[in-house]
Length: 277
Image (tube, rainbow, N blue to C red; front, side, top):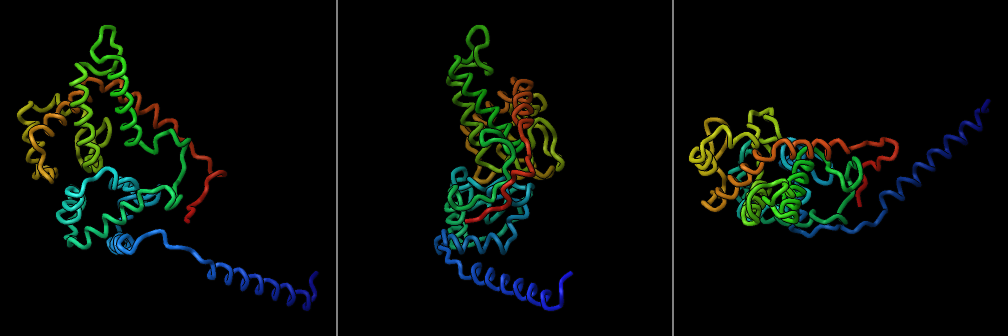
């Protein structure tokens, strides 16, 4: 049993410990890793609650694309369009030129691993973080195998048919798909909850001229906006080649995607919770 004097002493020690800890925490000198322009972009990110739909290093929402490496994937013209007129489920924000530049600086400076480690680690670093990442890795592996094995060679050395030039066009179409927010609405190998169709089945359901028209004008009445900036004829042909590649290799790519996504494991005991610099 503690005597009243000992209880008071214990309480005093606890209060003193709390005071020392508070002093150490709030006196910690930390350098700001972001430039002035990037901090302005961060303020816009917070003011518009972008984290509700988008993620950085594993933190945020899942409705929109992960923006951890957006600076490496989205060109300046597309970024201006997204931040002014929006796209798909993303509302128009009407950013000014200065605000767009600030957000671009924020995305660019966040595209560095030393900025933070707030990453919910699931599986090994080589495994996909989700279905979309697994899908992209499966496509990359299929394209790589097709090129290295001689696409269209006898015996089916590669998963894709056609010549090396065909694969180059498929790769260009895949890149055009990846740098645009297509994955915000379209899910790999199934219809999405918002009604966006399975892209691996589009070639079989649309004639070539209808598909080209969709890529050029969208389907606004069905919820698909026209692409901004517009897709030129070469881009549309490349995306069509990519969709034909998906259709022709659907079973193999779906199996590869499922295998990569199935490798995710979560060890709650070893999880490094939300670390920041």
